Length: 539
Image (tube, rainbow, N blue to C red; front, top):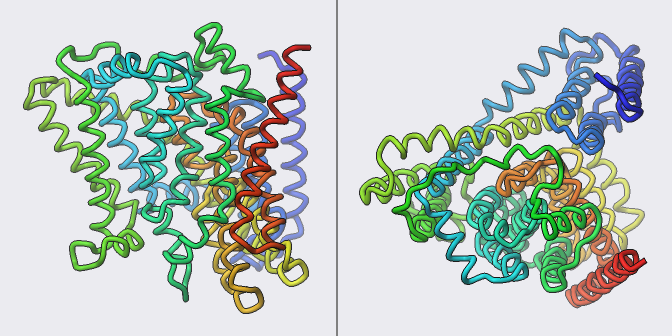
């Protein structure tokens, strides 16, 4: 194997890091078996930082995640390699795959893959693509339709990512929109949209951690201050109407426009993912109706878990719903109804329909693997006490910098979500801390602080290669995962920078009218970026 300077640098860096780990744990108190020696210190953030850095450098996600997990297990086991292996297997992979929430999401993921495979094989995707090409005649229209569909499917981010990808991929492909751009449009209309939708699995999750308050009411009041989510929408609209791109995305889009190359890089594992053979009997209805059935059944499944059919109101049922149970239930019922619809009309034979089960499962193996690794890495980070360490940073800064508190909360939430790959876990940790500050800050500042926490959680989740929603967006667009992360990162960081400035202003103004200021700042920043890249192109 040929090693270039980059490979040698990575190997040397890893050896140095592992040596440092053993140095840190060498003096650990052996009598202390309950907690790692580095518990709730800055070392707790080292495993995800290593994994993320290696993924961005090497462009290889599986080995990067595994190395991060291995480093985390060594830290948890205080440097004992035998205990580290036991920790990695039992407290890591097995615990992640036996967690009821994770299993529910995996079931939903597999069933969704099967349904997408059925729509492809039945000819629904092909028919819809041909219809859409006649109706949607421009790149701007294709991107706008993708954005619009993403906004309409606001129930759940997982559902959003996979559904929007399967429906819009034929359309964006037909207009030479790169898979990286499609993945960005999907990701940017998943969590950000769910976070400002009062009826969604995200609203339910936030309401569940707001103890002592009317969770849904606070969630709604926080929406105008959720600058990252709202400014992400502004950015998408600006990009669609101006056809502007920058950073690595510019190269992907240029290749797609000029060469018809939707992938750019040599690694394109999903290039031939769509089955070649599809039924000639299928029509647009064979894509539209399954999607409608899936949406309706998913909503019914979620409100069922919230007690709607036991007398609970619709809104309260959504607030109490369990997405890990409701979504698998809804998708399985959808699969049965779609089976009846497709087979009864003889669009597909029984054997062809059953073949889609294998095809759908196989298509979901890459995201399942990445999710499993990401969940295991998150378990290692949790065992090292990353949450209490970051929580301590927030509490320590609250008293001294009250007016800057929203901006501080936003940055801390961004970093925690980026390192752990979970926005739900991030606001689950930080929101109770913000709520406990309610007696020392004004009511308006409390709302702004909560919204800053939510916005930061979405931002960090949006940027992180180990985030489940980022993984789902890559899968939905059938895009190389690292390509999606590297092209999305400059866009997300641009919105994050403007959001940070807006939260500084909000800390002093404490009025909802700060949102228009943020929108003006966002548009102004994008105009400046557009002029810079235009000048470079003309030079």
